[in-house]
Image (cartoon, rainbow over all chains, first blue to last red; front, side):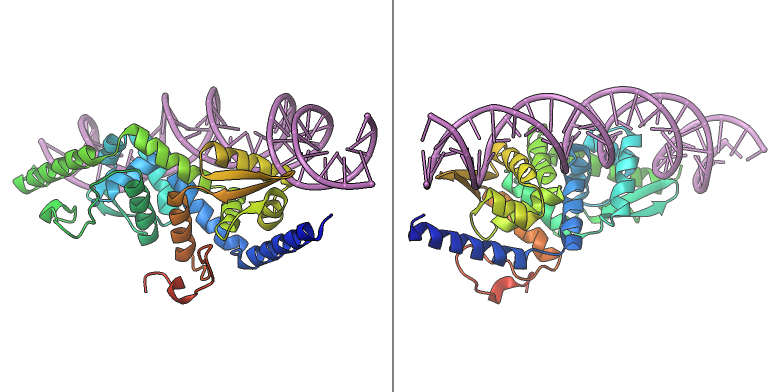
Length: 134
Length: 134
DNA sequence: TGAACATCTGAAAGAGTGTTCATATGAACA
DNA sequence: TGTTCATATGAACACTCTTTCAGATGTTCA
């Protein structure tokens, strides 16, 4: 084996050890993977996309996301368990909203990348009383 | 039903229709969900995290990610099929690298959020802007 | 109280997925 | 040429996940 190749191997080995040092902890990786996995289902993704613009009721989320109301409830339960969304009961309705700025950022970045132009934050151009706490 | 409630309902319905108008196409949602799903597996996530700093061989990726070489190969095959990584053959080795800037951005954002401080671009090790958003 | 409504929950079916083992391909070297 | 090495591939298994259905919970209103 020529020495150039040996040197090449050394460089690769060095790269590997550096990469391994900088690898996040198993817990951190698991957390990130969990979030991505939650976003990896089309139904949940549509639900969260709908929630980007503000709180919505379960039935509205189901309609907007094209899933059954039961399916939406299951999805929301999961998202709630992971603290991605929070719920506020108003009478017999449940109003859900995104409660994780990291997830919101990831979602907006991904949708931007896919060429989905209009995605405004809740704040600006406020639909005024659009909120559910009226 | 009091008129306040009726008006409230109107507002909600309006929100729903606006949300539905702004909902990305099924294809766009499916694409985004696919990417997130790919990032949703710890093994693949570690592989891609390792690749953030530059190209690596399969065996090195397997070691860095803590998966078998066969497992790494399967994962890379999947990532390659989705054009997330590209491969360059060097002798009998395969050197993989991230080939999707969107995925790279999502990954870095997610790792930043989880508190993983050092994640520099391939170029060099400038820490400085390592922080989240300031 | 009882009926209508919104949501939640549990269980079961079915599809999908990751992992492993064994083997195949193809390049390097002796 | 035959052997060794790096990677790729195929199949099988176990496992998880999504979806659906039926019914439960809790609220509003007459």
